Image (cartoon, rainbow, N blue to C red; front, side, top):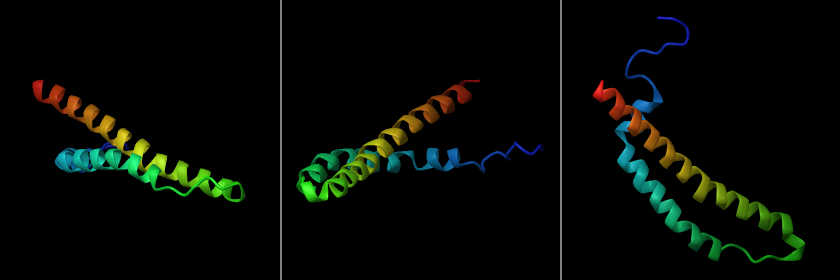
Length: 87
């Protein structure tokens, strides 16, 4: 085995595939919670501009970027698994 090869069943993809339903449900819940979190976010006060922008940016990353990225990654992983199973 060379430096860049891994033994079968030791990569993170195995765990993502094993817990794909849980990750999918959690991602959907986070996406559905995003509008409520924006609604409950602090008001835009001129003295706290950077705090408000930071809050919105943080919420966008946590509730939009990460769940969408996970869903895309799980979809690619599923397609790769199906293609490998067909071989």
